[in-house]
Image (cartoon, rainbow, N blue to C red; front, top):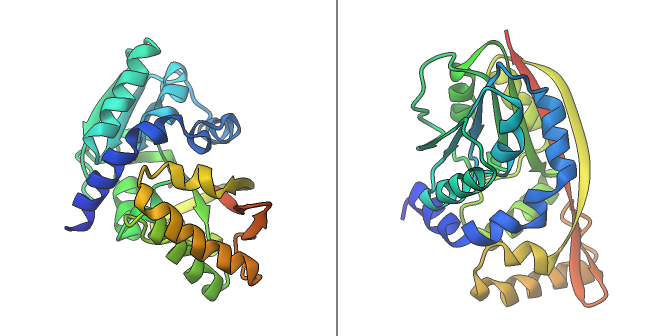
Length: 255
């Protein structure tokens, strides 16, 4: 199975759980994204990797148009249902690959993508496509969980993420995410970080893959007992494995 087929299979299974998961519906994260976008009623926005349309539905009332774009049909179905329930009439839904966006050059005033970069085999290619479809003077906003700058910690963190979800490629470090922006020719205008406490049960439940629960718990529990934190403050909280995800939201401008 190739990577794109694997993503479709994985997120077909995750669609229901992901659409209500607290990490995706968190109002604080949505407010950080809204503050970066600074929506206006003339703005055309692309929500790249929209998933179940949580960001789309939060921003659509404040802009002229949102295009909700995702690779997985079930995610688009969830996004459409969310927007219909909210009575939103200014959202279009498109299926496709981020590596080959089906839009003309300079189609959008703003492109936003949340929790997607770590799934891309070629993040530079995706960033180039994002920049291509962004108008001059427009914004590009990326929000994702990041890894440690320490290579060994980052490698272990990413290995755990891949065992949880085989579509995971790599959570990048803060410096690597900034390099993605600069390599794509974007001028970084702001960056914001925050931390989010996670517990194992909540984190693994989203995957809707019961066969992964016990083996990965044993691995992470053993690491925590050994004092190996994988750059995410991995630890035991009573009988539960817990850790901290650090987020980075970067805003860039196309010059």
